[in-house]
Length: 143
Image (cartoon, rainbow, N blue to C red; front, side):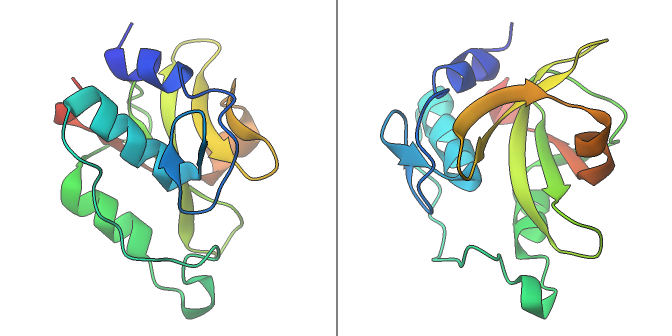
């Protein structure tokens, strides 16, 4: 199993807190990714400017998708590997504003993410979630 998946599972149960990135204390979906990065690579948290909960949705600005594409390695959405960073659109026509980490692949794929109202959870990557998936990245630093 990937060290990032093992680390991500250690975050399960962390409460959802907008813009936070602390295991067991609170995080949002980007904070989960930032905290995992620091935990697994041993490097400090990636600084992120303040952002609104709507991630610039009214302006249609793909800030999150651009930032991840600049730092990670894009890959085809159908080439799943454990520890991939997944990016979702929460509704059609909206900007990409939700991220998670692929945990399981194969016949029962799952991902770990911080979800408002639920905290950090692992859930099935069901057809509705797959329909929202807009990008998949690998992160060599997570290897």
